Length: 257
Image 1 (cartoon, rainbow, N blue to C red):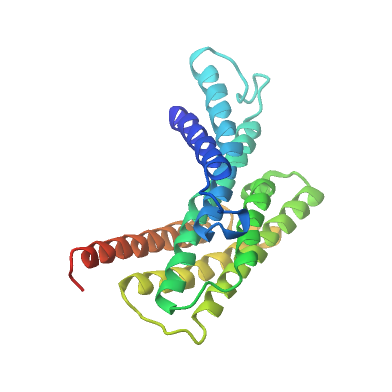
Image 2: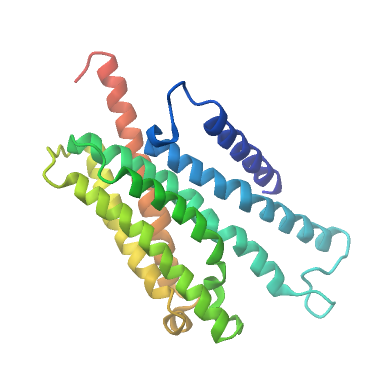
């Protein structure tokens, strides 16, 4: 896992450098496809959070193999330090997974609505906004830690803020469909289902952003369901939409309808 975290960091640097320095002539920032903008936001998360995972696993390796006590309670270490460092990486990594799914939906919905994507600028800012807020929400995974009401309130508000750019994306997808010439081919079925599952996952996430509710459902299957609605539902459905589009394009290229 530590090796893969280093590889992801290097890959993120590569993709950011490609987008910044190797765009085609005339491809200004305002003309970049939403797919590329979302890839940019995704890899900004990668380059800033995966080094934290690498450092955390390095410290854990020292504890396990060299007898240090960074995370050993009772030996001068602090177990919650590991939990904090892990989730400083762990929650932005959720957006690292879901943002590419969002860009697939942003390409699939306009294609099968036969309309341009609604709100190009808003969609770009929403992607960057999700990436920006992603670094300030990690402590909502352990409201029960006892950090105090002020800390919990800060992370509760920051978690709720994630819902704003995500909501912007959902409304823009719906506006793209509105009065479009909808074709419910297989990729579009996967994409629209992914949007509805994202809503279910997002609304349960807003519930978990409230510390009082989180205290009641902490370590329960409600939390597991929220996570899997967002990650499994949205990401896997978007991947299937992408795969079906690629398969369809391949069939058309070979002369089959």
